[in-house]
Length: 239
Image 1 (cartoon, rainbow, N blue to C red):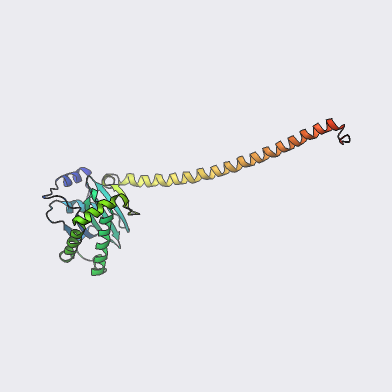
Image 2: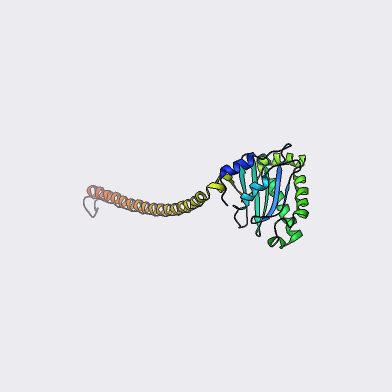
């Protein structure tokens, strides 16, 4: 189905929190668009699940990590072995703890269910694994962990994780593809430019060598002429 950016704006603007927002607000485990388990932090109400259904439809199936920024919130996800582990967190919470949380959730899910997630129906694991999500989210949302995350924000080194604005995913997918193509072309042009630059550098070097050789012969000839004039002939008999 087709969802515009304005639709998502409406979805998130309709989200109402009854209490102060938690660092990690919502999490799920899914296969493609089929949610197997999910949990929302206690005391919070909203339509995060509706928003994440839209995102699940846009997330590539290849293994990888990524974060989508939307207003004050970030959707972090890991795709591993056809399953998506996703959480919605406060933007100020950084990336280190959310991705550690997702890694822990992935390990627990695989240890508990093995390959069953690849064939399970929607919400098949929700009653059991939803409690696991709750426990791990509560652990990450404890005040001491929040303080740790604030300290680590300045040295947050979650590598190989792209961060995109969600607008690009929802309405500019073709523009992202075009940007990749342009990047490839720029790489090709850069390679050709470097190749031409090397050829030009070599040509200039040979030109300088030839010039130095000519200059050497000219100086040698000039010295010989002076000697001829000073020594009384070509045989230099007078010197």
